[in-house]
Image (cartoon, rainbow, N blue to C red; front, side, top):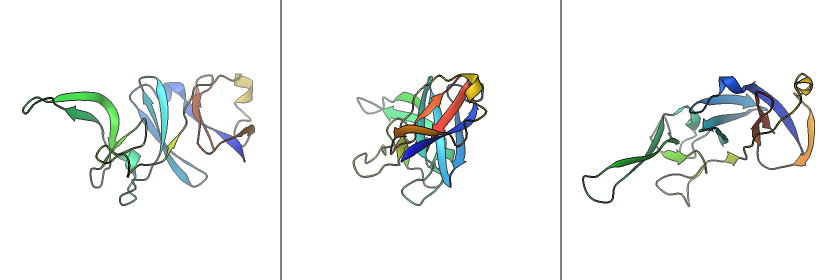
Length: 146
């Protein structure tokens, strides 16, 4: 099935460290900009179907010995706002049990298009058939493909 391109916002509205939650074709999707890389997650926690992408962004707390704590990967973990389950934004896998619990992720990429194509972008069919939702910045716009 061909993918449909949806313009979400200008790239300036989604700078590094921010997110945007959008509703596209009855799907809620969270788009995250982590240090200039875009990631898209299904906005549903697999535990109790909470709006996962609305949760706080955190990092991983690690330590090589008791009493020594280090915060790694700040801003790359999203915590479910209802029950605190944590998921890696880059992979969609849970922090506590990555092989059993995950949320759907969608491929993310940067692309360039001519600004003259932006006006007719909504509903434009792509020749690529994908199961994921590629996300990219196209001439200063963030675009999601369904």
